[in-house]
Length: 404
Image 1 (cartoon, rainbow, N blue to C red):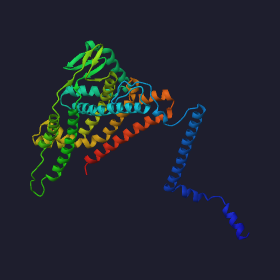
Image 2 (image 1 turned 30 degrees about the horizontal axis):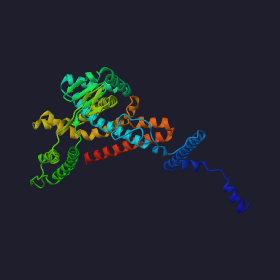
Image 3 (image 1 turned 90 degrees about the vertical axis):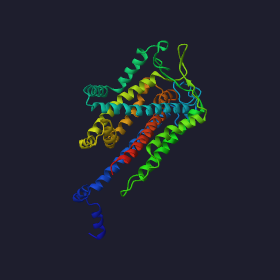
Image 4 (image 1 turned 180 degrees about the horizontal axis):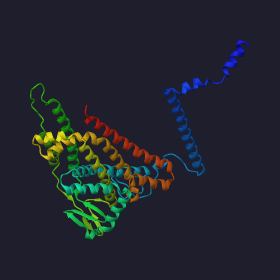
């Protein structure tokens, strides 16, 4: 057998089992192969689904793309933060639904955080009644589905509350009926907008100067620094600058108070039954989980910290505010982020009670245009962007307060 025949025999010789076993036994090579196979399977599945969708759309003569957003929507939206009408485009309707979702989300996050913190602290209270009531609240709310709670609150608001003519008036100018909650607001005037801008600017300046004071004003090498921007000055800036701007614009005091006109209220601002239901459901449900997070974070703080603060003569309120909560916050923030994301995603249940959030608006859009893939993609994109943005913000804050 010549050299050429020997080379052919060597080429078609069966693969050595020992070499194959040793190659498969390498974790790095095995991991690469598994990832390549898994990626190929995913790409094939996505391609098959896309091809199947394209064939079904072509068979039903359904056009694709987002060109429908420029067409008139031809449906009314009950709650609008910006001017809207049935003659507006689908893009405008989408914007209105998105703003409604953000409105509920921001208000829900603030209220749920406050209520959850209060309930969590109350469960650790030495008062037997307060601790038991907090425990009952947490266990009862957490174990009932949120959708059922939304139905309950909607029935309470729309069926148990009186009509506009017999509306409850817990405070002057505030009315509560089955049409919603009516609140007085300042009459439209440029002074209020200017005062709001001044408040935001004062907050930013106060934060920047306070941080500078903290860095430059701490004692170093046994010397004491003179603090040129103390905390009272920051408080005075935050409260004083908006008042000065308000006075400079004429100090308007007119208040738009809701009043009964016919069969409903006019004036002021109205929180519809759907908005009230969604806020109550989201806040009460999420606050129960936040309360347990706050309780566990407080319990994780070493008892020696509390005993040392008590030995210094601090009151229980100061111990909680200045010693316990700042340390517990580092443990509270990571699970708190998950609850914030859950609240935002649970707001999509608004479609069950008729609140016009982004899911409800796009659901109506899909029914009218047949653009199901585009509509669902927009819904997924909205919640993905909101969730990732909130996660990035909370991760940044968590990195700022962690121990180094």
